[in-house]
Length: 244
Length: 291
Ligand SMILES: Nc1ncnc2c1ncn2[C@@H]1O[C@H](COP(=O)(O)OP(=O)(O)OP(=O)(O)O)[C@@H](O)[C@H]1O
Ligand SMILES: [Mg+2]
Image (tube, rainbow over all chains, first blue to last red):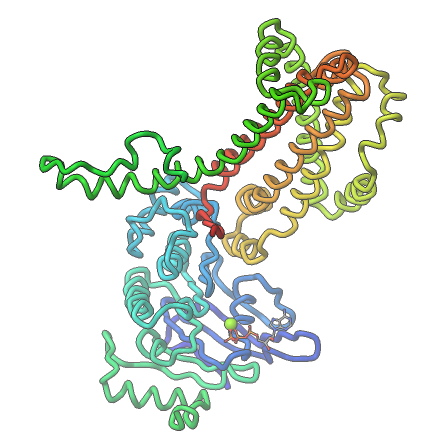
């Protein structure tokens, strides 16, 4: 029932007994979760299980009704849609709200890092879906978060672009070493990127799978397939998967 | 048919000139859209031109008496004469001054009121209800009251223009502020933007397209108000010039006044369009539907 951080890492994020109700329906029911410093956690769960609700609470968009939530102040979030301001150029979007010297320079470095160095002055509505999502990731990274939240950031991208973006997020994480909570529907994505996959169901973290595979990870790895089966089992989609 | 209206050279088929063969495809590709545009513009001007020609023919043949409607030729001569002796320029300046002052007042008041009621609930309670009630009044029906209050000088005219122009600005900007995408507001919160920065970077730019819609409506209404104000009682201005001409059955002068009003309306509309293109250049061009 408890979901400890893997290893002896100090917890960057700590959630204890979090409850969230909308009217009579309880979406989060005494949920416990912790994410270690620099740990990459994938959050899985069926549609409507409350993943976005949890993220919104962690970023402070929704209030904590009951329970305890500890998150670092240096945090950033990337939503499923990029949510760029269409009237600001790409670099201005990334630099928005940055404090300190040379916000523009730092924004440009972050954009180079996600491979958008050639689109610095573009208007957001002229970006492709993948480019817009990368700009959103640059906007999060430029804040040097110690905790980064990603809510299905690649869900609307085509398969090929998604693979590229997964690689990029993996590389960025290795370089920045921030704690990451990645919400995803894609079991393979979780297995490629995360140190640990947790499954949210009926308001609680029901399962927690450490993923001790060596990186870079390959689908062909027999351990990969074994973990994949276990995860799908926990998500209760195994039967559907075989029927298809 | 429209091809005959094209400027020389654009559609001329390239003469077989071996020296220019490599360049020909590129220049043809460049010229074609331009030629097409010129052709469309030509087509658009064709039918008005025919109407004016028919009108002139009817006037010359004595089918239309000058007291009913002056001929285009006569109107043109009168326009030149009025410009030459300064009558047109003097009256135009007066009209422009009234419209400009009234519109500036409308814009300033509309923006300030919309900011007050758009950005705070208290402001909405105080400002919005009276504005919604006032806007149902037909502004033109206030002319007698304005004359009683302000006399017959410049004040009632400017006030009438301002009153007509203020509501489109207020209503559209208010709606724009209130309908800013909530997802972008959430994003601003996750970036820890303060209230001031959120208003400056998210709310106001998001409301700008609506403000520009209001601006365009407001400019149109301002001219309408000006026409009425100048014809009810005035001793100068384009409207006065036209009313004076009425006493002497000078339809040519009346037509010159109409033409000036039309040009003013057209010019200010082009101005607002230019402003839209410039301020909303972040919007991808929407080609719209054209058969
Ligand atoms: N503001 C709200 N008012 C009422 N119910 C809500 C509200 N927000 C979310 N819910 C409900 O809470 C439940 C969890 O929603 P949430 O968006 O967190 O799901 P999710 O796990 O992110 O799903 P998905 O994978 O489809 O994005 C859903 O049943 C949803 O209908
Ligand atoms: Mg969701």
